[in-house]
Image (tube, rainbow, N blue to C red; front, side, top):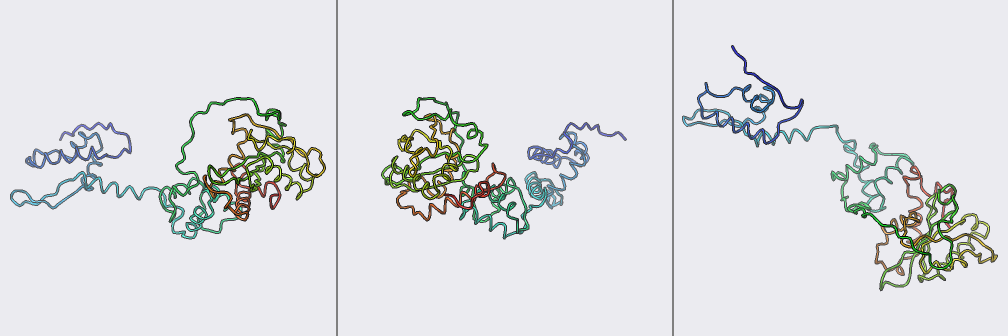
Length: 362
């Protein structure tokens, strides 16, 4: 008895696709119209599809349909590519390990509350649980939690609820170097300790405005370069005098010596509210120098990226176009405490409050 020659050309472990199943159905339909002695064997079908005879045997069982009846009401069974494909896809859903979250509803509710109410990112949620202790059965990494969110496992949370979901990265930006306004010191002259974030006391400062026709109030935001500690003050007007008054108020509450030690340098942009650098550097109590102010190059926001990131965090609670005159001081204080208590990946999961060693900002 001669054996049909079989040459395997498919990759080991490669599954049949729908196109091959459709071809198999076509071959079987052709055989059904022939006498039994002229029909192809499973080994011949396997040779035509370049697969193993065992694969054909399993595939015929997977896509079996019937019983069907011929012209003389003869009962027989056939093969359907659609039935086989549906069965294959259904079986494929059971692949892989079970989800770690399983039926931990308490963990899912906690994640939902942190994202929707507390405006926390998935990474911040995981870092806080690992820092303070995880009371839940589920212990996952940030990547796994993102996968759960993409799968829709966390109730009530959509991808649009994530802090930066759907934001596209900006294209290449051409750096522009222009002369500084006035006669202030350039960021190029800033001490190396500030540039390398080797010591605390070096701050970046910026203003958040309400927008056109939304009042004159604004927020003064200060971010420490090393610990990312944040100080937010509400200003009545977007002027240099309001900025100076806010800094003088901080100096009076801390004292001249403490202010000088805590605010060694301040880096700002070239906004009109920061051009009075001599008054900003001079103590309102002793009349002596209390800090050093440095100006970034125009259109170079990356030179004070820490405060720009702080502004983006503030925008989670105060979107652009909000009338800041209607935002209460209590709300601003809460946002400041929220930011200083936020776990930071760059601080190895610590918050600015822990990194700076101060329970509260100025």
